[in-house]
Length: 265
Image 1 (cartoon, rainbow, N blue to C red):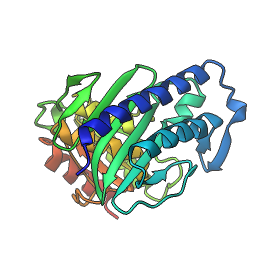
Image 2: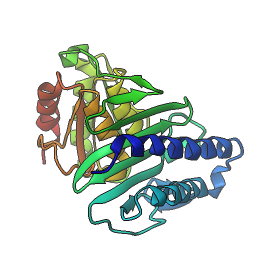
Image 3: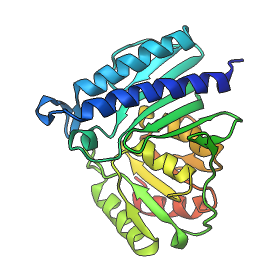
Image 4: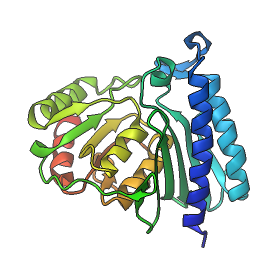
């Protein structure tokens, strides 16, 4: 059995180091240096260098662990443990000098997320959690909000940026949430959206077309803060990010019902 608390504390330090690298590069970053991986899917040397820094440090923690990383600077399959890394979640925000953007490091045991760290670079907020250990923000315990209905909730989402096959349904769903909640926010960093639910700033989040590295750390942090995360079918296991509904738990049945009403295929 791995020492998840000890591992998480070391993950925090690695995330802080990567975050400070990103913060320093932001001062002189030139958007013309970006690369394009696909439609509205960008990467920079900052993403790649941050990932290399994180990977090299994590290799020392669990030498037999595999890696699932956004920039694919390493390809290694682990038998039991897998690091799931987004070295710069919110690259488009970063390129335009717009907060938030974050470092996200998750640890998966078999198919379960068991530890996670999200460092929101611009605010220097460090969110972390490990299975059974609660959720933390800069060393203080955090919990989800007590809102019981969507009508009392602030909701976050992310606009589709490459898969527009469900765009009309998404806009109908977005319109409903705009009219029946305290409002809808789009921050541009899914990792940040999820941990903001964990500390009570949002009550719910939904999106489609994400990847495991976008959500891995946020999932365990939110669950340890008392929240719930599933896909659009309500399945809470083997989450890949293709579909995600995340809430403070109390509004989960209502929010899942609305998302399915508009977004089911």
